Length: 530
Image (cartoon, rainbow, N blue to C red):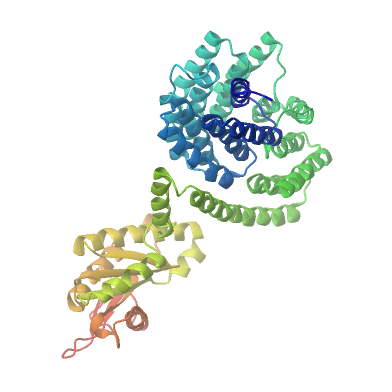
C-alpha cells in the first residue's frame, strides 16, 4: 500500500502536470482521496479534492467544481496553508473565466501569485504567474500582461522548465492575437516554434491551433490546413483532454479549407465539429459552427441557405447568452457558502433586480419594494412613463438605435428623478415603459416635478441619434389617495388609467387625478391638454 510520503509525491505530480487527460486524472484523484482517508491525513484529502475540482472544471462541469472548491479553500484558510490557498485561487480564477467574469478571474489570479511562498513548487512559481498574465490580457491590460509574460519567460529559463515556456508562449501568442496584435502574435509564434525545435519537442494540439489561427489571418491557408490536420492527429494520439478542444480544432480546420475553396473538405470538418458540439453540449463552439456554416454556404454561392443558417446563428447566439446566464446562476448558487461566495450572491441578487439593457431597477425589485412603501402609510406617488411612438424609432431606424434611445431615456429619468426625490427610484417595466416611485411626495408636487422630467427628455438633443425623429414621453401619475384601496395593483391601475388619458389627449404630457376640490391636472407643451 502507498504510504503518506509517496501519496504526497503522487499528488504533487498530478497537481503540477501541464497537460492532463481530465477523465483519467479525475479517477486517479478520487482514488488518491480514498487512500488519504485511510491514512487519516486531512491535507492529503484536501489536495486530492482540489485535483478533482480542477479536473471537473476542465471537463466543463463548472458548477460541480464550484461546489467543491469553497470547502477546500475554507480548510486551507483555517490551517494557514498558503500553498493550498494559492492553488485554490488558481482553480477559482479558471471557474470565473468560464463564467465570463474577467474581473473576478483577475482578482483570484493575483491572489494565486501573492500567496506563493518558499514551499511552492517550481511549477507553481512559473504557471501561477503565467495565468496571471493571461488574466491581465483578458482584462485588456496588455502592457501589464506583456511584462508578466516576459518575467515568466526568464523564470522558465532559470528553472529549466521548457515545457512551461512553450505553454506560456502559446497563451501569449493567443492573447496578442485576441487583442488584434497580429505582428506581435506572429513573432511569439516563431519563438514558440524555435523553443520546440531546440528542445526536440512536438508542439501540442493547442499550440498548433493557435499557429493555425494566425496562419489563416495571414492568408497562408495551405499551411494552416496542414497545421490543423497535425493538431487533430496529435489530439487523437492521446494525452490531451479539454471538452471543447477537438471541436475547436475541427472548426478552425474548416475555416482554413473554406478559404482554400475546398468546400467539400470544409463541410466534412464542420460536420465533425458540429457533432462534437451536440454530443458534449458545447454551446459556445456550436454558435460559431452555425456562423461558419453560413460563411461556407455563401462561399458556394448558396445565398438563400447562407441567410437561413445566419438566422439560426443569430438565434443560437441569443440562446447561448441566455444559457450562459443560467449556467452562471447555477454556478454562483454552488458558491454561496463561503464569505466570498456570499459577496457573489449579494452581487447576483443585485443583478437579478436590474434591467440588463438600461441598468435600472426591474419589475422584481419593484414588486419587493413597493408593497413596503405602501404599507408605511406615508405620502407616495408613482408614475408610469411610456415613450411616444417608439415603434417608429425601431421600424424607421433600427432596434439597435431603439436600444440606445431606451438607455439614454433611462439615464435621463434616473438623473432627473434623483434631483427631486433622493429616496425615489426608476424601474423599467418592459419594452418602452418605465415606472418612477417618489416616496414622501404627494401627487400635486410630484406632477410638477415629473413634468420637468418630461421636458428634459423632449428637450434633449436627439437629432444625431434619431435622425430628426422626436423622442417624447407620456406620463400617468397616481398617489395612494387616488387608489380605491392602498394596494400595489390599485395604485398602478390608477397610474395606468392616467397614462391612457395622456396618450389619447395628444401624448407628450403628464396626467394625474385631480384633487377632490380641483379640476383635472395635466401638463404639456401645448396650451391645453385636450
